[in-house]
Image (cartoon, rainbow, N blue to C red; front, side, top):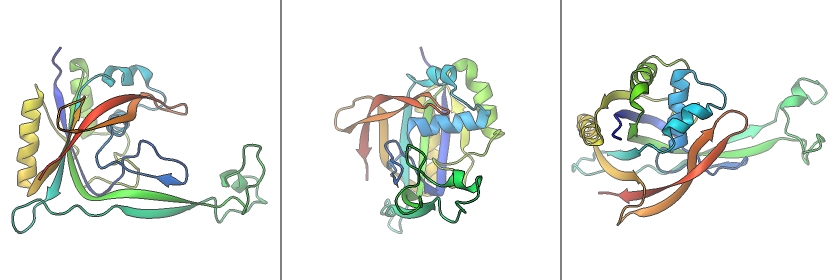
Length: 237
């Protein structure tokens, strides 16, 4: 069955698309994850909690990602900016004698204090100055509702993390097939003087770098669950 495609444009000074992060180190992939994109959809719809039924409808549908770099003075793709590393202190500045403030201080499994009083440094990694076109297949009966929600979102939309604000409208139309969505993405990139330097195709495609990602969400909320998918990554330019 053929599904219509949304064209989502993800552009901003910072983006972060983690899929295998730990408490102390929050990495990012060089492109948006399916869980991150569906998180944007859920935020637009105001769909909180597990949302198992909603996520199941998108689990097996296609998602393609195209990355765009800025155009340099020679008309070529500019070099990518290096990853930005930031760090956060978690659990510092709280009064451990206050019963409410102490709830915000990290503790061991048994509830006792950790070594050093509970303050922890966590490192966060971000992509800088990137733009992505995401071509997302959508169930036809959900197309109007999702398109409208992306234009008038219930909750704020972010590029992976809440501190990564988009600098362009995310919704850039819907199209009857992936070819027309890709053409629209290339036209928009040309207007912005950006050149494609990365492509991510769902599934195994010859010539690409094959990655297995645990980024297909089965349930959000407190008990998150994911399953794997394979993608083919191509660097271009």
